[in-house]
Length: 330
Image 1: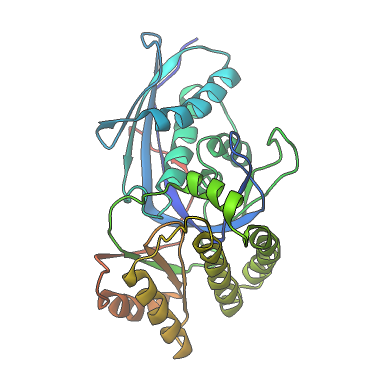
Image 2: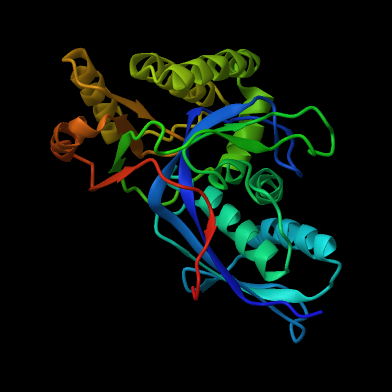
């Protein structure tokens, strides 16, 4: 059986109702569902080249050999793909990220969605996006959502094997063409990776159970807001859910403080904009950088406001975009 080299690009996504807590760490099964938006242009390009000459998977990320921890996660994905393809042939893998790693901008989500798309294509598998999302999840939980474009629901699932924990698209980028302005707050990679932080919060935060209960309610609210294209309703639930997650992190022992002074300044600035009648709201994953979602006519105002905040080292303006896809001749 012969296999062919394949390249795929997958975008980052930002959760509106967050994922912070697992019921199975090996399979990356969440304790609660989550809702996200996929952002255009920012993400990961991965190339997978199967070769019978390789004794094991080899991976390079941004021109550096992948470390042992990354290879464990990659191994889960590649082992599943090989089993589905009925082969033991290993592959060489090269990935390039266009977003900073470990700064709360979902670089692992795009990385494993791109890997899943490229690997399944290289090994000759034809899967729909929901099935593909289950494979991506084995590398990174949030990668489940980066397979799809637009607005995405990641179902918690009930089965122990994760067979019903998958993502599905709620609305396309064209259905509700919001814009995004990312305030990059550069302080280097976060000291506590998300996976480790989730375990710590589950074990020590007195707010953790209430946080998980909140997610179920907030997901339902997100679904209703997206269905109605109700910007104000989506803004309220997104900011509330974001702050609830970070409250749970702050109450973890020792506290997980991903924010920097500029993070807080951006939040205050966005709330001031909305109080003044501008359609904009913020959300923050496990890192210092802030994503501000807004209507198209607000991009210049939001950018001008955030660009004047000390500690914001860069702004990226983008839009809601499509999901993981093969790059011809990539």
